[in-house]
Image (tube, rainbow over all chains, first blue to last red; front, top):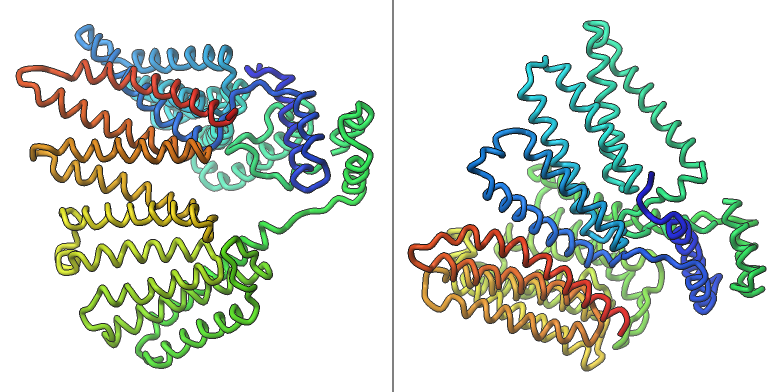
Length: 233
Length: 328
């Protein structure tokens, strides 16, 4: 499911642990170098400033290229329907897949921008589709939160991104909330408890998953590795 | 995590880490420690922030029943107490980096400085000590802040001092206009801030060259580079409709070249990135202005192509530069 090279992901987590020991003074610099060559990581992972810069530039490029495409096809009235924006989102996603596979980007800013743009366009297109349909408010909300939840879970599993996982959590809770509203006045009185139960279920399921060996691929990658001291053993 | 310990055992048997290091890791594995260093620091910082805010609100709400002299006295006592502690505990002055004697020292110093600045501001607001000499009212705290930052070696207070310097320069150029119209959009202010930015860059280069508190260089340089770039761009937009506005952009290019050269020498990718981004912005402004000034043409399509292609080229350049800086 995950797009990245699993050996590299494992090595990355091992390298982080070794680096934490190096910072704590348990391991010498030569030993660190030796471990790094024995357990290599081939991802392209620039520093935080480069990441921000690449993110901004990719966003500029994406917005103007989609503008250019839309302008070229404006006479064909392509931009009148939700399909166009979903098509753009899908194109972004395909570019993302190709870039990550060939260039081995991992949190480089370029892949972040492509991921969020693709997710935003697909989600936005779906909202457009639903708002054009004749669904009732509540059914529309359920449809949107279900779509967001599935999309965010898929993207999280594929790209191990932190923001999409946050989105998945929130849209799951939204899905529970809107589904429960169908029960009428009884629902209004019991919603807080249902939300509490849903949160507990979410939390305990994720805690269980985080203990599985597969969780090493989904280690927190936001802003590099901020929890240095915690990663000692 | 036990599996992680197995990994270190494997590293040890493979000969990747020595016996001594492995012994340390085993020791840590058997007696794990939980570090709360960051949490304690964060709580200290928050505590000082909340204390000053809370005191401010409390005083503000009860201003009529307490009286100004008492409040001023209170602020002075807090500030004086903090500085008494700091002068007592301080390490001797050095031109390099001086470690603070303990974890609390920096925070006590911060509290003392904030209350000192509050004291000056209060006394000016209430009793108008400096009269309408706003330049003087900002100049004196600025001197104090620079003195404290250098004497106790505190980067945070240096930041406050730099901001105060900018305030003083802006205020002393056009105090009337600033106060009456609340606008910064005038040529004297732009000029003043270009001077301010260049001054900061000069300070940064000087502290590196003369090895006098050379760890302050980053702070000076960071603010200096941003302020100069932004003021040059502000100058460009302020003079947009006058001929020769493009000269401001050439200023941006020139500065970007100098800063990028220095950053490349010191291998600081952050400043290289800043130069590339500000330079790109300036170049785009120039291209947009040139294309839109041509009569009877519709440059919209060309601009779309430009803004699609140029970021890609920039990203490739930046990746290349980043690799070069890392491997150099």
